[in-house]
Image 1 (tube, rainbow, N blue to C red):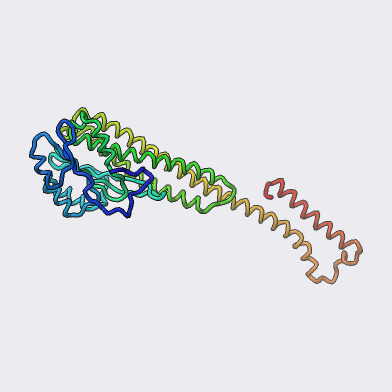
Image 2: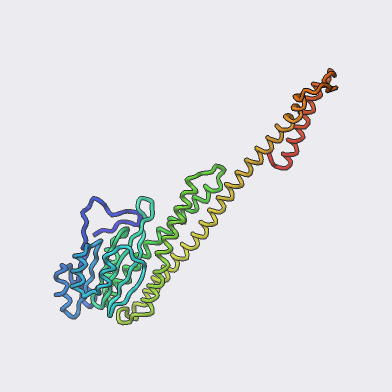
Length: 339
């Protein structure tokens, strides 16, 4: 099946199909072909084969069927029933259960999902929940390298993890570009409420993305160092490469979160500075209006003896005095950069 690009979503009108792929392989890495779930046990009876199953939001009956076919642990199946698990890796005998958080841009917004992975010596099962892309491209890439796929299902695990991490990079790049655009809006003269709202939304998304990516480093680190019965030595270099990619994504997310925090603080500072400038101007104009108000209010006190009222030049003199005082206040405020 074709996989959508990182900025596309799965078509909601298409009918939901729980079993995406169920493929059998020879030990030499060549593909035998698609099989049914009921045929899994028959295939595994042959010593030189393994099976790769891809599921999307399966129901309980389907998971119980897989448990029966692969003898999966009860606790792993119980976790797989619920789509809200933390990123982790659990060992059950000679098998591993891995939970990985996934992210995808849906209609310009970041949506999160998760993938549950069952890895055994002769099987790989991926269970997708929520926002995630099909792992068909990862499967095709693995099938193009039969010499590496001959190392077993763990190479398929590498392909899936590498696909998940690589799809995080365009998301990080889009966040970086949008942050650069928002930085230009922040230094604009007009205050934009939508800019502040988007900065907060980005900070929330980046925090959630970091919570999804950071624990993945520990998961892949364990795959690099531990579980020699499932991860051949020849594949550890490939998992180290995935670890390096996860580290870079995590560092980029952390750096953007710091930049975003600084950007929000700068925005608040600029808003406060703008408000202070407005208040300074208002205070300056109020001071200029207060001077003539104070002077002219003297003549409303109804004193019997105000000598200057009898002088013919008193009124023009008073006008000139008021203008001079206001002009002096205006000149002083301009020099002080209050106006």
